[in-house]
Length: 300
Image (cartoon, rainbow, N blue to C red; front, side, top):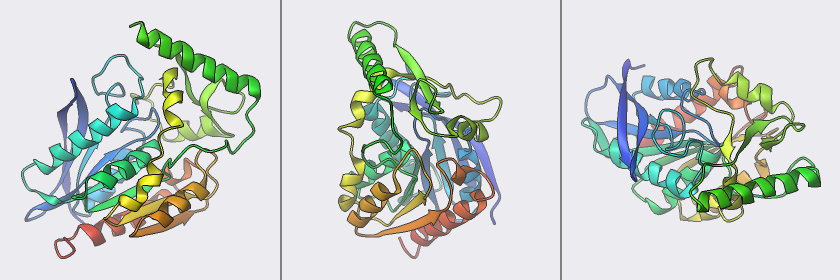
């Protein structure tokens, strides 16, 4: 096990800056590195630091960042989810890690979870210098909701998205909706136990805010990063939560079947179960082993 240090780091993306934590292991020679980011509306302090510490202790440098418009990163308006902007943030973060002293630019991996797991597939499909990818409980493409959604709630969500899009076009402040909640909540993403699940990974002083600009809804139908998995040349590790009520395990398996060099690790839990014990240590161990296998100097 390696000791490591964590420092604050900022990098530019578009017209704004992203806030990041940089974990540097105390190792000799150029170290491999991993870029990490969270999923839908979430921020880095929601258990991603625990994964970063596990990877850094194994000798892997980590750049863990918040997307623009979220957490400690810049960007106005707040809580604006833009797939285009977030993919730009990933590209900027990868470029930043490659430029850090003591980092091997040819041994850079990606780690993304949930909606971040979508982005790592899209980035790796076009950046063939990426050496390894972990896509944890990743969004691959939209499909029929796994739980029945009342028509009134669906129409309400579409109305909110339309209203927010119009406000954005007029240069007005966003129309926000609750981001995550239980089925009875008027939230963008709902499932039984979701409120307790998000609470289980959110520290009291977290920068997370449970709201999002409603216009994001119109991006989901056309964003299908799992369909690009066939263009991912490097090894990719898919982490699946078999009882995930947000993301269908079937879509993840279909994406993995497209990737030329994919492996799957399956866990008997819901969407938030991979972040906390009793499964977190096992998940982190398996993902660390995968990254070490494919980011070693011999492999590179």
